Length: 573
Image (cartoon, rainbow, N blue to C red; front, top):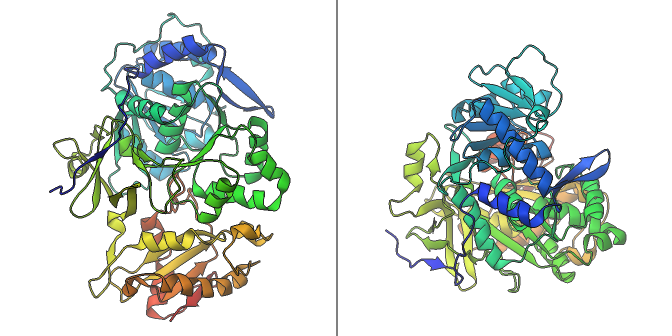
């Protein structure tokens, strides 16, 4: 039973292209020679014009159709972001077929599992490493490779160059008449476990999202994106990528993929992005460099930088203050893969409040269930999970409302996120603890902290796991971005001692008292996407982290001491 009224935007959703093919045809006429995308080749950014992109899409569609790939078929893609992936994905989606991007960092067993589940007829791979994961799949009619593959005896293997080398037989893109409700993209949710959840998204889902955002911001062909967010994940693969494509902006690939801060800064200097989409972890690395070098500060905060967009987790106060001090608006969004993904965004003209993720975008409605769960309705909501009717029934109401699994409340400033519903746990005395509120309290104030994770289900009290941002140990950050009386640790031993006082202070601010942690463990370990400890959007994956560090957690509860020499126990009793 829903006990609250729903909340909607005061703006109306404008008209938008009925499908992706129509959008691409409209945009090639508008932007023609303007670059749509560029990536580094021979140490220099090489632009791809709208006209060239369109011609390649026509050629790719010709090749696909002549080889039996048709509307409704699925193309699995295992690749890092690259020009070939962009062109293939747009060609497939616009012709009425379905793109299924799969995280290229998955090990072979997981990649095969997800490939088999989505049942594609064709697949595409970036390189030899990705090809090795799927070459034994007999049901694939064709495997397209972007880079050189060291195999000559597979008749179903073809180079991507073969798809673009021939002149197209038509001057019109295929798919202009397909229904807006046609599924165009299937995307696996983060941290897929057990039976996979593969979200089915339509042309309407994706294009209505961008039409909503056009009302709220003025992106245009003069804008420059420096992009590293992975395209197999909704933040990068739907929200950022199509924000650039729909508005005619130039999408420039950050070719370290957010893995090397020095390369990212070099690319930033070359591109001078006007907007930047990222997650708190990368903003934290940028802030660290800015604190240490005034030249980097001038380069980051150049005159044409208009705003930054953040999602996935709360932005620490220190980083918020840094961008505020330089007059750069911060926009934060909230949503899920199932909602294409954005549902709410903050107003950059209103002071930011912790936990507030803004108001619904045009065309989207939000309401709160009696247990606090957030429900969403709008043209951005998925059609359902592929081949998983039980999971679909669990989240989709008959009247169109989608159950997000997030708990929150609606305030005058907008939607306030409280926790994932499945993260709230009960102590042995049956009292409920909301761990994300406490994790965010700690993470937002300590520049030296990368991640915090609270556990305690069924226990007498909670404990908290802390993972450091070790890059800050080498140099002292700018004092204006640190907590008062920060000891500025230079190593793990120093940091463990430094945290003792701060954790005591944070702990005393937590109400109710039963939610306070009695012990903390600082772990000398870097969480990674490859090990699935972080999601592709760099959020901590609670289920995985809980399993990886089960021995450390159990040891602290049962013996009160560390299970290994990479763990520092901080006693707060």
